[in-house]
Amino acid sequence: MVVPVSHQDVQQSDRFVASSRLSTDYLNRYAEALMLIEMAALDSDILSELKAWKPIGYLEHFEASKLRSAPDASEAYLALDPVARRAFEALCSAKDRLVETVILTLDEAGDAASHGAVIEIAAEAFRNLFSRANAFINSDGDMETAAYDKIELQAAIDRIIAL
Image (tube, rainbow, N blue to C red):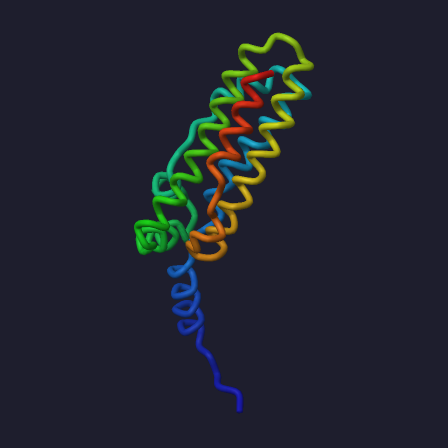
């Protein structure tokens, strides 16, 4: 037996799904940073664009967003267990520190050969962090999928600085 569904029922159903979900739209900011890091190897003028990139928190991103689902994404974030939220924020902070390290290192490194090595190390570490943040959001805040190794991140930063 087929039960007819009204347009209003579909809208309410969509709202329920949306309100229970985090949004990967926030990660677009980090995708942009990664793209700029990778492009800096090809064009040194990109470094100025990378310097202009600024980190912003999940809630701040959606407060400024024009997305229809922005309030729902914020609501889902606020509904997270505080420990999970702090873990995600630590993960994002790690990406922010990595971008900052890349900017400082590229700014100080004079030769293009050094830039390539810095970018290769940083891009790999950044992709790893990005993947974990994506898993966290897509799992609606499962900390285990977002866990990252702080020692691994510090080792990548140390390799960048050593160049």
